[in-house]
Image (cartoon, rainbow over all chains, first blue to last red; front, side):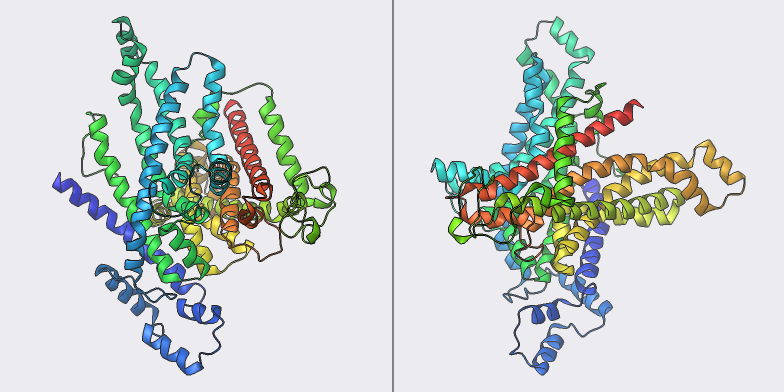
Length: 314
Length: 281
């Protein structure tokens, strides 16, 4: 097990290093550099040429790019991702203080989305009436066609403004979490429902289901004891893939609901072209991707005993 | 690529004649394209000038989608916004298709170290959520609808590269490619004349699907305020402008949202229909 984990960590390193390099190339080399964007963008004409030059030298933007790259990489290894150009505080602490809010939102959205997806998928696979099945299976295409911000705004308009049931924004408390979590969960629901319904239908056609039916198992028992576990694999993989997208979805959701979090931090950073913060969030997302993939692979053997963990997974 | 639309899902629903859903989708997309090319035909009111006395009026016969906080006709803004809101996704898909297919073809055809390098690059692109990646690119390039289009396009290169590489690998070992190589046709020629036409099919299907996703991404970036400055109408921006008046004038934000959703829904439906037709042929 320890050996497996070590080999996976080794595989993850190139991806993380690559993401860092990509972000560095994208954000440091492409237009000009972060500091001159900040200085030209803010319209701060009060800064004289000498002051700009001094700031540039201070932040190390005059050094050759390879040196900047190595220095940034070195900083990253010691947990230093530079400072925000807007607030001047360290990027790591900014992301660190925003992350719990987003983690709560993402976990809630994931729980709601996976549960709803499994229920809708199960009902659709078992439904005897064609009309009901088609109604249920129209949820996934609808779920991925509505823009996230539109879903959020509809919920705010109906639930917050008309029913006055839940707050339309804010970060604290359970009540403020409900609507954003629902908004963010819709793509998860859609994906899981679609994939689970398909694999469940395949499983229900298998011989051992007929055997279980012949032995007198009821539909519910059939479903829970025989079908779900064997049909869950593809949905697990799909869930792993949508977790990364939750971070992207959080940018829109947190903006719509005026919540604090990594998404809002990202949106603000892009608006102010605060490139170190953007770079930090991109790295965070790659890290999440790597960790989630590992977790999915570790969960797989629990679902299906035939799968064993080996070092050569690629 | 979205997970919920795959060939396997469409296969079960092959019909001989287009169903009502497909006809409706054609109709919706037809209207959207008409709005993009000739907005004057669909809306006669100005999208940028409003009458302040007429502000925040609910939908009526005169103003189908009501008016916004400056008294502008929301329907006219949506119609005139179709141009930019659909052109940007089109550019994005073109970039993703062009770059992705090139990378995938070269990678699958050459194999070896080139393949390894390109595929690691694709892995990295896949590790960052596409919306976040396009946000980072927009932050680097600056704002504006063209930059948004480029950002969304670059963020979806990976899926095209993967799918085309798989096809190129399949085609590379087929007899007619071996025959061409044996007859002395040179590498680039084989790639363009013999491999490309047979490897591009799945990427074409993917691009119809990606168009819907790109509409969503572009409108999200425009909603967040990274598109053109006001008063240029864009679908995402119209919604974000209406957001502040949601409590009193829901139509400003929600009716344009419905238009976006309807367009994406129509695109996805047609994509699945094309895919199913392709399977049958």
